[in-house]
Length: 364
Image: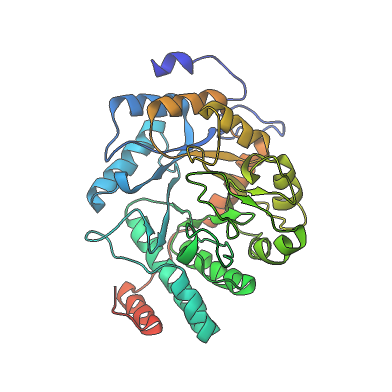
């Protein structure tokens, strides 16, 4: 079934020759989720033919370390690539797909912001160690990309969908701690994804359920919301939010707005040149069919769409609307992968003890 609808030859599909000549692996510009703890036969066939860039894990996919390793291996085998990226949202606190008793609990990012308010150097050190331990846990199961850190700057009264997932309300401190987190992840062989460009901290609605609309003037956005992302513009991967910024584009969320992506995210206010993922296409902030959502995200200038819920009917629709990665997206992905070197040697026990000392908590 899946081999039929994706079997039409297309020069834009994977491994086509790009304009500069060399053959590059141009996989479909999408990351997919799966329904459960192991792939079904239909999922294996679909992923083989769709050839997504990679995959993302959620709580429903994570039971034990052995099971996650097996699922990750199945996903990579389905597309015939041992290096296919596998993503996860493992921030710590309430956003953790891998949880006790099989994996340790990690603190929310607010814990590092609170520590940094008292001692900036200690907060920075703790954030880096925490991320290094996260990377150790993820890499052990074959996960290569963590959708963290949250770089949003929350404001008083905003929806608590961000809440303690954010470091604090000081843009400079957010940037400092986020960079330390990125460094810790990359030292452990895991790529970070800074999110949610160009800022979700002012949202008074949960974009998982509805479309947030931010009324703040552009000057306020540039001074606060955009500032951490501008400071982290050299990071390899970013995720764009489903949030309307009325001062920039009153008609479309950032993820489907060419104006926001071109003039803000890629433009001078932020200047981010890493690979851009969308936030999850299946979130309630977006309207219309899945194919249309995917097409709108790519038309806005994002590099790769994210579809996370593992619903086969939706994934088929998304794949029908998503071509191979553009040449620019491939180059951005290659730059990112080049930064994901082997994990540096580390004494995990010493790191856990030091983190507990810094945070004043029991050792994890």
